[in-house]
Length: 184
Length: 226
Image 1 (cartoon, helix red, strand yellow):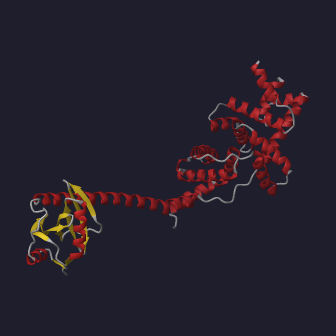
Image 2 (cartoon, chains in turn brown, blue; image 1 turned 90 degrees about the vertical axis):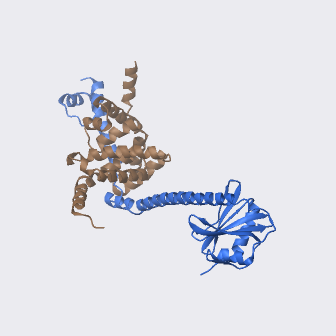
Image 3 (cartoon, each protein chain N blue to C red; image 1 turned 60 degrees about the horizontal axis):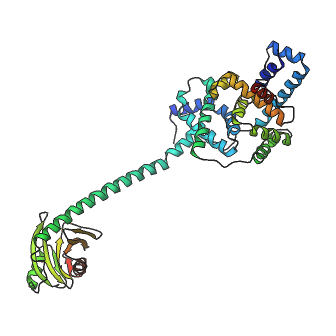
């Protein structure tokens, strides 16, 4: 079926605004759900939903955060609809490292260790870290995306980095000391 | 700046460039090591997160088109079909039920002749009665009474036939056609609508066995004329 001129314009707008964000949306969802097939499904549904409501995207600059918001909702909706099998973190990290090793010149063992450490983080720590390191979001933007205040975002990021630092054998987890001090 | 404050600020964002943060890092060797560790963590994380987007992705408008097309229409068509079938089935059932009521009431009005009897109507009368419905008999059953009445304004000859299980009434219905047999029990009578050739015959009796006999007789002896 041939697309009408209006439909073609909409497709062009979608391609220009949303398509460049697809990689980031996929990576964000993958680190959120820790499963490659689930991430693919979530991204597909996210883009379908975005296509249907493209008219509501007024500011092209905010396309990525708009897509990430839809992706978070889609991810939550998917988990409401069906339970996915639990994935063993070692297997998952190894599988994803395999994919990365093909395209990057990095030590696959190190990559696997880092991925395993990221997967082991609590979701509340993992998500802001992904948004900051991968998407380059500011604390304020992350706070808006997650619907929490900036102070809470900073605390989560501080803990996420310190836990990773400890798990990767670079040094002690300073956030534990902070927590202990706070408890005293 | 305190060590703890530096670590909290730097831990939340290793790209901080405020002068006091940079100054503390330059002045404190331990915090500088900590900062370097976190920068390394960030580099490792960035590398680990960097995955290519999957190739098996479908354009959303193609996906939408696909989801909209056959499955949706099939679902819609199926719902309409189910609704029509239910409505049609209900309507036919009600219509048939009304006919049964009418026929049984009619039979009940003639209960005085639907009795066990040795009386036999002449072959000529039976054949004349049946001919009014455009039918003929291929063999003559034991008819005790032959009458012509009207059912819903249409001439409906009926024969009171004696069977080993009791008398039954056969009504020749030229205006009704059924593709299946339908039965009902009303007012103590067993009634059956039986498709015979291009038309139908209603068989009414006091017992199911008598009606069964009546159905066999109707099927084997009534023939519609062209």
